[in-house]
Length: 387
Image (cartoon, rainbow, N blue to C red; front, side, top):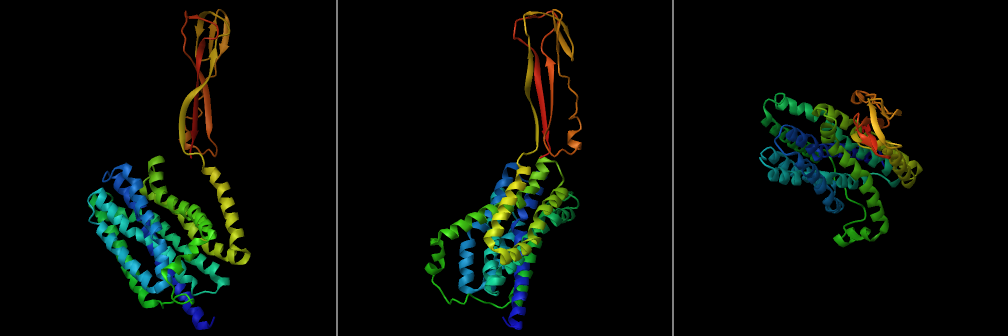
């Protein structure tokens, strides 16, 4: 590769990554915006899942056609068109007044998710095979666009709504995102050079031929598991933190950014490792490591009260004494496990593992006639876990 070609390739990769960052930020906008609207009772909580999932679904379904168009016409016209097309429903979102109009606009700007397929195809044609892992890893860092939205989105909404005193101010936010996509489209069109695969023009049938390979479907499954889970978490963590932990939108957005930002930054390193040691080796190790680390998140936040081990009578008789510590039947004493209230401040303390407290409470009174094996005290169990 000549010096000029190398410079042009690096320039294209930079602009490709920047455009992908803009698209990714817009693609996951609903994670912040819908949570804000639900928190302020402009939408029902049951609608969160639909409105967050609709853009993700659109982006997933149309990735294959977007990739085919990129191979056929080149990345420059396809990426530029995508940026402009997605700006239209984003701007229209500011006029949505009900669930269905909001969902329709979300369906439209969800096309921003296809930018990954376009950028991958457009970036790869500029680099030789031995450098594609690093190049595509750098491009994948555009995932950080999700962190941009979750980190700055809440502050933008606070500013636009005058600290939630003018709720209609939220309508300016999608307009700002639409303007960002249009500006990015202009820069991208004026600063990039179009390039298509060297194999020459192909028919649609030829472009779809790789789908006959089982390896393509297997890689698609890997992608479904890894990237699908990433997008799910990136979009869902904000409402999860607000609903389960009671955090405000700004704190929830910050914590969600702590998840999204490192994954974007480390992609370039992952691409370099793939070039050096092989993609399959790195992928299997990443999948295995992720599975092990995910076990720590297996248990959700819980605050459970349940029954426990009770105290039965060993023989029949009459209750002669009852207290929180013991029960006596005709002079025979049954000791009870006393409540210690050790979980009183559990929410304020950090516990890596679930914590449990058990105790027993009398269910009989002095003078009661008790048969053998009849229950004298009921067991209680309290389990708490931060999640």
